[in-house]
Image (tube, rainbow, N blue to C red; front, top):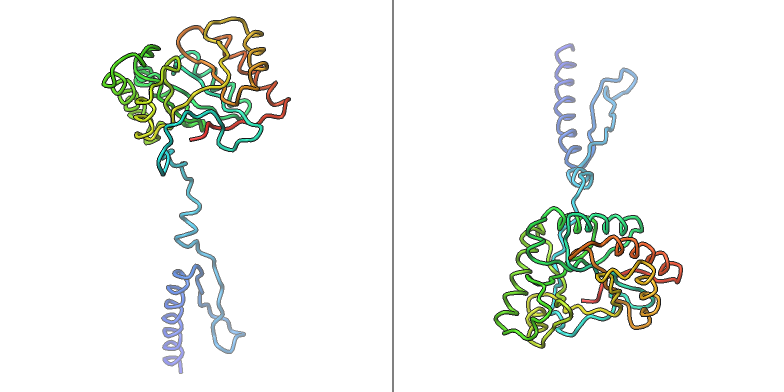
Length: 272
């Protein structure tokens, strides 16, 4: 009788092992235990075991890099926001700058607003951590040429190509896979060729509706008043974070955001 009981126990253990293996696959484990009050001689305790899919879901994930547009890009100038309506797009030119770009980013982060940073190629190459910080904060990238030549529309197509594509490469080389989504010619010096070239390389030509003239440092009050007076022209607002001393730009940006929010404007990216 004792031998028969031992054999029964071995069978129960074997069956329990099979049940456990099946349970692991299905997400639970059935453990066989002796129970003197149970006519079967065993009872089961169900333990939950995370499945492989649960484990995958529990791991922190890094947001994927912006892959850029999935289809053809228009060569027409962008003068509207992606969602339209009562919204504006803040665009920040001539950086990145080691002093003023972080201050500009701090203002945008304070309000939870995203912007488009139009970068000079060599500056992006010189300050790769700032390019990555711009992306980490959820902003978009724009090509603003290599040399910021405001007369490049009078130069050859080869020169324009070099200025645009070399800058794009310099920016993307330090952007951890993110793509440059726009091209803004220095001083608005676009040509039909430069617009088509930009679009063919995945970049929407980006204009502006409100030129704050902040780069001239006319005073914070004057910059804010310019935005108030010119916002009726359209939603793309031009500020600067590079090319000189930009303390007025940083303060005016904050005050303009306050006013725009009070007026019921939302904030968006330029349309691609």
